[in-house]
Amino acid sequence: MRGYTYQTEGTDEVARARAIEAPMSPKKTYEVLNAIRGLPLEKAKALLEDVIEERRAIPFRRYNQETAHKTGVGPGRYPKKVAKTVLQVLTNAEANAEYEGIDTDALVVRVAACARGRIKKANMPRAHGRATAWNEQTTNVEIVLAERGG
Image 1 (cartoon, rainbow, N blue to C red):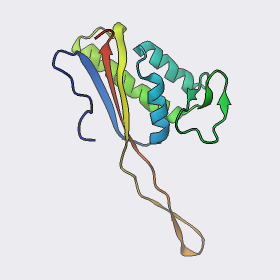
Image 2: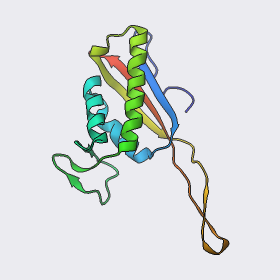
Image 3: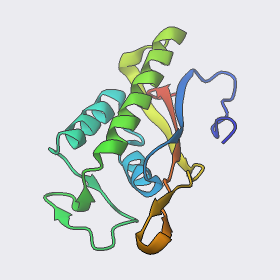
Image 4: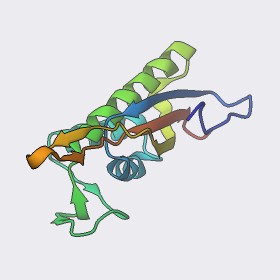
């Protein structure tokens, strides 16, 4: 992931932020970003804070094999690690918008995209001199905020 996937048309006033190779699951990140895409900034931040405190669940639409149902959501979970990282990226995008002089009260999440990052290779020692692969997945996250109606 070299640059941003979203390209502006010159007149668009947008604020962007991204996280490169964040140590979290790409599948859970996909579901969290689907939940906040299109929401106003304040609602998106409130949703992520509720997920961290386990007050609201994120609906799992795609990666929901053997996932328990949550009240009012259907199959869902509380991906805290992902929510904390995405909240941090969202806060960075808000700060970038403020720096650019964009009205932060009228921002919505226009683009929320993720992609698999590099896999960090490691081994876990096992009995009798053996080893098991113990790899860590990483995720690249990109968030673009734009003014409502633009």
